[in-house]
Image (cartoon, rainbow, N blue to C red; front, side):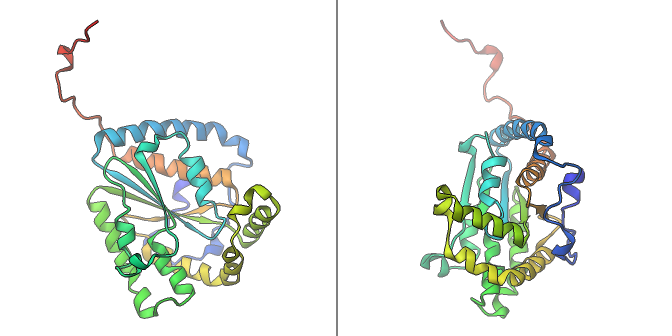
Length: 270
């Protein structure tokens, strides 16, 4: 489908983010055109989540990456709207704790992977260790340069053990980020979201774009490809990701388990 295939990074493909307009909305021109479709996708997602939970043969891990204000929280709130919260866990990856730093960089990611029957969402992820770590020279290049293959091996192991890995890079422009940051500063109800680091990191925009391009090239694999999601328009971002998640769940061809008792012999007393 046009919504999905246009945004999948072919394994090994050189990525230039300038070739992916963040304001792209396909054949849609405004939000109202997507409401009916998104409502249908929400219904399908709820049904498929119930089937995923009942069958308990697979797990789904959704990874959201992108610059500050790209819409990770909004994606979780809008795309996963209405699903059973008992079957979905969200993990936010912030600055590593002392305990986490004393272990391998994938430890905190692996311990947060969803169990079979569940959907897990990473708000940022283990990819921070080839992004912010690289941009700010937190470890030597000889260390972070090995992590691309280590991440690929980790994700392959997850897939081979029944976890579907869906990775979305939420692509916004620098101008769009500026507008969103200014909106937070001007709106008292959003002041709690404002952090000085968000402003400081803008100075490293080009460094981050380069780091993301390398990440997308080296870590888009046959078993866990990256999707570049145009995210300037929130409504289009939500639609594309919802399409991708629903499509991935459908491909699992799930079935409800057989009953553990003979249903025909059950009677409910008055």
